[in-house]
Figure 1: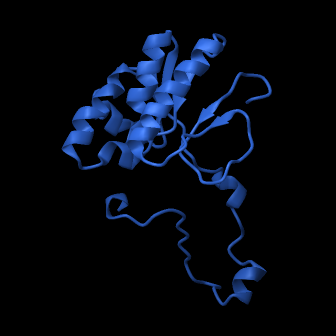
Figure 2: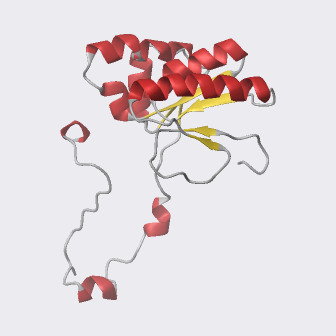
Length: 171
């Protein structure tokens, strides 16, 4: 992406610098310092680089920063949302953060369920798109009688593989 486009990353505090000149981090930890740093650094970068046309936030937590910067600098706003981003059971979070969702130019959800939550929260019609973080199942379509299964003593048994956090809300 960075080979063909002007790309900068503003991310959270880390005690070790990664040495990449396009990655910016606040000097201290915490949510509030990160928000203020993101607004400041984003403003500086957008003022210096008018070729940047889209501001992308990696989670719903970044919606207010992304929308404010997009409105101030007349750019497009895109926010990636995950299930817990939209289902988090906090009234202040839902009132203060999620109401900004309707001001985003695009909302990218990681599942159709997450997209339905975004629409319930009143994201603007036609702005929610789904890009699942999954894989092509066909590439894992293996014959049932594999030598490895026999060697592990799993021949004839059903196997459930789960990658992620086990959470009650996920069923």
